[in-house]
Length: 386
Image (cartoon, rainbow, N blue to C red; front, top):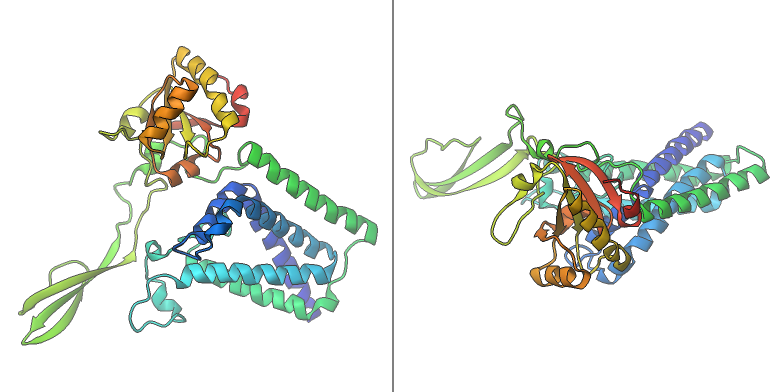
């Protein structure tokens, strides 16, 4: 039992630190995921949505800190109870993500082999966000991961007496306090700027056209077709991979099921649209394109909006094509242009896509023929070299 506790302690502690740090690198992204869970069509806890960012910071800082506490052996009783409560909470979220998918007739919730085949697009929340954008797990993988962690933390719970501090009392306390202070500072820093490590498809150096393209030799989706025919007064089903079955009977209908989605490009929904046309290709061919990204104009930071006029006018003088990208409507766009006397137009893009592109509202993205040259938080506009 002693050795089992030590192994569990190391594994759980390191995993919580890694998982927590990845989310702490992007607490705004984790808050977006929490908002999905709080929405009316998922947990229906919409009154929590305004507090999602605060909850996000508290959860991820606490996740890192209890991981450090466990490795240090600091306040083991408090640490193990905290880990147990957190893993119960996380297991509920990942279990909900997995189990709220489409349940075909006759398939049990516990029939994992059958569930594996179903497309994640049928889930209310497609990804739990356990490792942010660094590592995407399927709902089933996330659920199984948390079940394993739950078992390991229960081992720690029942083997609590074997968890001892690895240092004397004073250095252990100092290190524990430092882990809290550093985590809190780092979370604040990335919120006031941008994530220190960008794991998304829109990171600096990536070419958006390449990220949207599907290679000619890419794996194609694998579909299963279930055809229904009326044969001699009785409905019968015939399963094929797409071809029309050779059946003597009256056609009734067909249902399709995705067995394998095939190759999915990293970027799928990015677009730059006017009221009349799609201008994505046109703008991505520009040499010096500067995008002012505001996923929602009314929610944009006033201090950031105040910085746009001088900065964008200077960019236009230096030969940049300047455009805005937002999901807000025409009225909000015109009001913003008039109120801040902006000399560029705003185009339409999906809110979730803009949130993915840059964790700032407003944020500045500079492209050269579709390649991301820089991404800047509105706090750092003065540091951009045009």
